[in-house]
Image 1 (cartoon, rainbow, N blue to C red):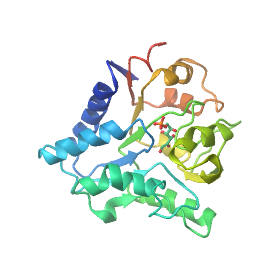
Image 2 (image 1 turned 180 degrees about the horizontal axis):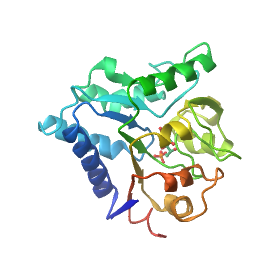
Image 3 (image 1 turned 90 degrees about the horizontal axis):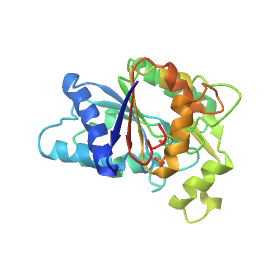
Image 4 (image 1 turned 180 degrees about the vertical axis):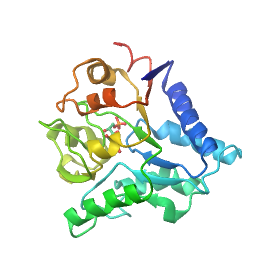
Length: 241
Ligand code: F6R
């Protein structure tokens, strides 16, 4: 595992974006697994800058997002579809048909999970999967549990996640109770993992996940078993390691 401890959020974002830039330059038709949340916003801004300066081309890039709320339309400004278009897809030359997220409005949830997993497989899996980490160690919406969920599935969100995410909604009641997420198995199939973390609030969980026991109680701890993981964090998030 490689660890980059960067001075602040800006440096963290630049370093992580540089790893994605290198991936796309070495393989212009890369399949990028992408994440939402507040941590990657700065790195998406940096990718857009490099696109605007002509250093990065998304023409052949394909993307698969980690997760999506169940029950939100694409137009809902809290859907991950909306987030990704706002922060990245609308700002670069990615082809709309190359952008993939679970369909939050699918009628048959089970079928949607199977469709999404098969789609990722049909693209050959992610070359690089970007991840953030939740305060409870979740990756995607894989919450602490007694086992590691393998494939894309629908989860009931934990109260702590609803609490953490309510800042984006008018009230906690409006946060959807269910979401689709790639499974731990889906994530582990990615050839490279890039995980980003910033802020003092992540310091404890970063230490637990990467230097504690591998357990489904801390879903991100499974990444210790992946052969190619890069953690990029700011000094605060990496203060305890
Ligand atoms: C987002 C996702 C989540 C976030 C995590 C951290 O697609 O899957 O696991 O990465 O909740 O979120 P932030 O970055 O807001 O701290």
